[in-house]
Amino acid sequence: MKTVNTCGQRHYSPLIPAMKAICEAAEGEQLEIIMDDSLAFNDLKEYLSEQQIGFREIYNGEQLTLQFIPSPRP
Image (tube, rainbow, N blue to C red; front, side, top):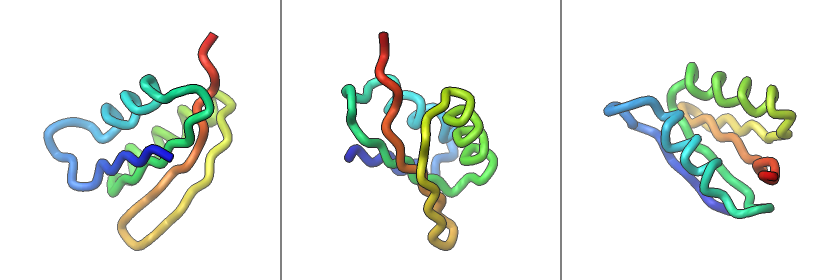
């Protein structure tokens, strides 16, 4: 499982490293994205839902985590 922790990211949106990880994921590789920005977290959940990618949500205090396997690319 590849973990990307975007907590404390202030220079740019935490969605950038999250999307980079999705684009670079090997086929079948499980990703874990950890965030502390609830707006970006909800945007990522919406994106995954639109792409019909199932995910697991984990809430741990201020940390918000999504675990999923990106869809295979054609």
